[in-house]
Amino acid sequence: MATDSGRMTAKGGAMAGFLLRRLLNCLVLVVVATSLAYLLAASALNPRSNYEGRNPPIPPAVVDARLTELNLNDRVPLFERYLTWGRDVLRGDFGKTVAGEPVGDDLGRRAGVTLRLITVGLVLGSLAGVLVGACAAVRQYGTFDRLSTGASFAVLAVPTVVLANILIIAAVSFNELVGAQVLLVSGETTPGLEGGFPARLVDRLQHLILPTLSLSLGLIAVYSRYQRNMMLDVLGADFVRTALAKGLRRRTALARHALRTALIPAVTYFAFTFGALLVGTTFTEKIFGWHGMGEWLVDSISTNDVNTVAAISCFAAFAVLVASLASDLLHAALDPRVRVG
Image (cartoon, rainbow, N blue to C red):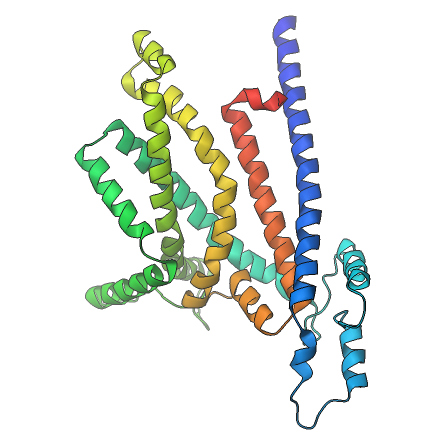
């Protein structure tokens, strides 16, 4: 009894140490990534150009005063501007936009929009992809394997922009066929919608279906190919044959031993998928009229809005590293050996 208690304590200590190391690593990486993003944006973008070509012309002294107020004056040394920005960020202030509005006022709402879209797409795409890939591996060269392989390559060959427009055309045709607006193609919600919580929830789901599909279909294709290959690598392994020899049913042995081992590389891939989705939503949000971080990033670059670009980069770095931490924790749960690494 005491031995079992000691083992559990040791396992808990190893997991706590692993988690602490990962948190410290993530904190350092967030600081580095955010700092580099700000320095790159402040060097590449030119907020002063927003005031050029005005009629009547704006006096240079007025432009300098305005840019200094926003911490965007390119005549102030870059490192000095970075220190000012960094001190404000530590207090939770991401500065002001080129229009003079606080960046933080819009950051939370737009981050919520993007995370809602990404989270649903990632969960649906990764789970469905793993399931399709595992089933295809178990039925290697069967009808399901060949169909899923063909469908995956077809989806991967189509750019996100084209796939989104194909879904819109299909949704419009479907709505005409059933004689009702079942699939809504633009916006997050219907403006002026009346009704209680159930009506608003259904409306949000109707708006969510198409952009979620445009993100998750590509993920299903990628994860199914990835998981199929990983599953094939372990199906003939000794530990799977041993489990079958001990009397385990084939389905139980495949799920408990083969799939769990084959999931480890897919879980590691999770964080990189999340980062790719952050980029992919830029097109999806524009096409479907979702006012999230991707659309905001494009607009901010076109207006030379350094503080907004830096804030979006900070959010992206934090989100990707949180996904990376979640990936590491899932990896540790599947393979306890990494807890002491």
